[in-house]
Each structure stands twice: as structure tokens, then as C-alpha cells.
Image (tube, rainbow over all chains, first blue to last red; front, side, top):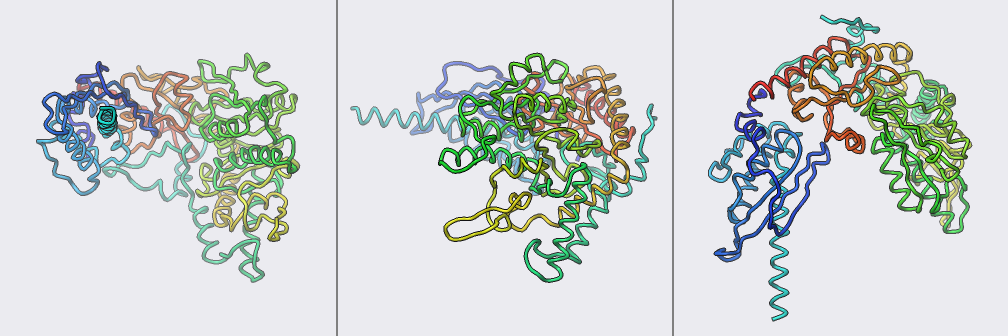
Length: 164
Length: 430
């Protein structure tokens, strides 16, 4: 294992030229996640788009801003480029796949490239337990924000139903 | 080639530390620069623990069989050795799990005394807090000497105040007279900062605190392992430190206290061994230090820590301090010579210890640490449990190298070369 396997060129590219960095409006929910061991921080907003959402599976738009190490910053950039405008269900599937990839430890996990895109480049991080949280920070924030936005939407629908 | 010469015979010292002979990552020799987090252990410490378990193990201060006597003797002999190491007497030494617990023991003396007084029970007024009372700490405290006082303030209604920092990483004592007043009930201050390396003037601070009638607690985690300490000369009421940062085992810390102050403190953890008399209706408590050592204590760890004190005493703490001072001066010089490197903490090797924190322009500490790790160099990256210090200096985190008796100028060279390699790795492909 050497540094280049962990810091793949694709990761360094995203780190140097992050995609979609900067918070935008409108948004349903903003979350702030911190990695308490190192102080990496991310603010992440999601906006659920229910227009032509099949059933209860809206599209999710996200924006983010944060600070931290190259792994966390690159991972947030990849997250933004991979998950902007996808449905909740496929976004959640991608997050799960990312978690599986990073928590593989010694057992190599064959990643689903379809779901993860550039994020497969983070496979080398799985061998460094101390860095796994860096790579997952933004993805966990996305999951949390979407869950909160869905819950808020459900509560609003329920309130409307009782009022009607 | 090193520009400096080591004070101690590092090659010979290193042979006493089995772990330092191992390699890491892809067969790299280990360069261990994280002793401010925890130190490595010499074989004498390991043998002392092993010998205790192999030959004398029994529960101390209970039982009348021969092993119980031997174990008790070993435990109390360890207390005497550790007391001697800091020029104290054995009854002044309370064994705890670590320094964090030592500080919590004092924090709970305040909140438990306050609870007792509120319930109409006897409590020493020095440990009873009410709204209007103040606890004074500094902005450079480790979380272990910050969070417990935030909790005490919440529970008692007292106000937490702190001495701010100067831009060059020292205590800003300009407004000390408005911070330290007759409202101050406790001054809790770190002797040597684990992140900045700053050595604080605790003797004069403690004297000022005493003059206004405040109790005083010194967090000596980063000083007892690295320099000669005489707890009585320091002048504080209470001093806390841990064993694992001074070549001893994990699982043992110390709270030293003036006997009369310890005696005024109610128990923290209660149960067996810490009582004088027990009935179904109530209990009375043993005198310190037993009052604060409930349950079967960490006996092998105490024996191991005593062996660590003996090991350090044989080298001589003045020599240890001299060795580290030379290394620190050399490290500050080597790091400062690298463009883009900023020391976070005093830049001059004056009144500062061997924890050297720094940032590298454009490279996050995690990434610096990763490149160093790839070269076999173990440093600490992050906020070092002193997050407010990072906030004060506007950095998310730092890289910290810290030195001990087994580090050499070659290790400093390896560090400086590693930092340059990190700059090449992250900058070169740019």
C-alpha cells in the first residue's frame, strides 16, 4: 500500500477543483456535521423536488460547503457531482454502497461503479480506519439531511390531511 | 547529517523499548513522535507488571493471606516511589484511572459538596459553589481540564472564566487582576500545554490565586514526564497527571493533594475499600487516599508506574529536560526553515516543552500526517483535545510532533524531510 493508492489522481483532482462547493437556495433542510476527532466540518443543504416524483421518491438537489482534509473535501465534491438530482432511493443506495466500500476493511469490496461513479476511487481509504470518517462525512450529512427533509414533508402532508 | 548532538545516549535508551524496534507500514523503521499522546514503555516497566502478576497478585487492602500482604506491600511501595518522584509523601498520592479522572475527582468534590450543602449536610465551604462564584481556567486547557468545569458551572450556577492567549501562544495576563478576584473559588491551570508546548508560570499564578483565597489545581500531564517536579514547591493545592505519558502503563493516573485539602473533599466514586464504617442506614469514609480509591485498585499498573519513575530517576529528570530542550530547539529551527510551515505556539525555545504543533500552508494536517505515516513517522493530527486553541489561532487542526527520551536529532531530520515530502506530494502534482 502506498500513498498513491490512497490519494488517487481523481481524489486529488476533486480536492483541488471541488465541484459544486457553496451553499445555494432554496433548500428544505440544512445540516452541519463535524468529525469530532479532527474538526472536519460540512454544511449541507438538500431540496426535495416532488414534481413528477413517482410515488414517494422525489429528486434531491444538494449544495454544500465545508472545510477539512483532502479526503473529506474530495469526497464531498464527488458526492455533489454524483448525487445532485438523483432520486432519494438511488441516492440512498449510493450512500449504502459508499459505506460498504469504506467499511470493507481487509476484505476487498467490489464496488458497484454504476452507483458510485468517481467515488470508487475512495476504495484505498478503507485500509486506513482513521480516514474512513473523513470520506464518509459528507455522505452521512446527505443521508441525515434527506431523512430530515422526508420527515418534515411527511409531517406537513399529515398536517394538511388533518386540517382538510 | 544532523546539525545538533543529542544530550542522552538515545541508541542505548532505545534498546530498552521493545516496541521501538518494530517497523510500520511497508517495513519502515518507526519514528515515534507522539509521546505527548502516550509514551512507549521500557522493558523494566513491562517486567514489573508481569512479575507482579506472576508472583504477587492478590486483591490489595483485604485478606490476611501471604499474597494479599505481598500485593498490598507492592501497591503501597509503588505509592511511596511515585510520591518520592515528585517530592511528596505517600498519603498525598491518590491513584486514579488517568489524569482525566483525577480532574473529575476534584470537579465532583465541588459539585458533590454543593449538593450536600444544599441538602443541609455538612460540607467544606471551600468546595461549595453558588451563583456569583467563579472558576478560572485558561484558553489553552486540554478538554480534560475544561469540560469538567463547564459541567460544574452548569450544576452549581458558578461562572466559568478563562485567561486568554496571546498571538504567540502564551497566557495573556494583562487582565489577570479582573479575572482573578475574591469571586474566584478555583484556579485550574495547565502547567504545560499539550498543543502549544507553552510552559505556564504556574508558581506565580498559584500564588496570586492563593492571595484571593482560591483553591488551585494544576494539570501537570505534560510536565511531570518531562522535567523535575516538586509538587510542594509548585505551591498548588492539587496536581493531576497520568502514568502512561511517563513510560508507565495505561489505566493509572495520580492526583496529588495537600493532605488537609484532600481531607476536606467528599468521595467521588463510592463502594468498597473507601469506607470507615458501614451500616444499612449509612456509612462513614476512610481518610485519603483510600477515600478516593474505591474497589480493587489498579495494582499492577501502580507497580509499573513506580518502575517507570525509577527508570526516569536513573536517567535524571534534569537530563531528560535538557535533552528535550535541545531536541525542541532543533525541531523549531528545522521546521521554521521550511517555507509554508507555521509553528502554532511559542517559536522561541524558551519556557516551552517538547510538543511542537505546526501547520503546512495548503495541506490539511490529516494529509501531512498521512504522508509522514507512510514514511514511518507517527505524529498526532487534529485538535489534540484542545479545540478552543485551534479556534483561537484560526486553524481547523494542527500536526503535532512531540519528543521524549528515546527521540534523537535524526528523528527531527526525518520529520523535516517528511514535511517537505508532503509539500512535494500535494504540491508537485498541482
